[in-house]
Length: 183
Image 1 (cartoon, rainbow, N blue to C red):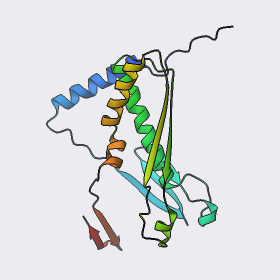
Image 2 (image 1 turned 90 degrees about the vertical axis):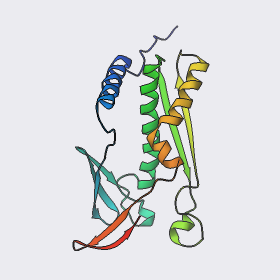
Image 3 (image 1 turned 135 degrees about the vertical axis):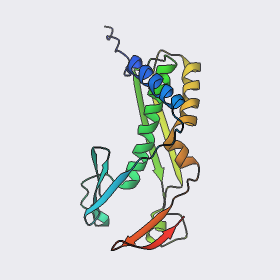
């Protein structure tokens, strides 16, 4: 018994039209620089709330480190952010290249040595290796999907930020007075 063929998971017409509009807008504007802002507020112990545009994102730590385990850790969000961004770029360029995507599943694994965070060893506290595994079901053909994967690797902003050092300016205020700053 044959299974019914599913429709592509991506509304390619919608994505292509939006991409054309945004590309035209970039051509028309004097500057393409944008700013994104996310505000985070500590609620209780490690439990935090972030506001991004109109969305609320919650984060916590596992119970074994004193958290309440109510939400993913910040480092898990970082891994998810990479996969979310990759999936968006796959959808965008698959639409442009007219590659049907029936399944897109991205698994991200991050490896770190927690002794760095605990100050028990002179190792970095962040991930020392991140692995991506992307599964695609498509009738688009191997060569097109390989080209798509190469484009995604070059165009994904989160991948770019994790692959290349990005300057971070950090200011700390105590009672509205700056007490620390680094560039």
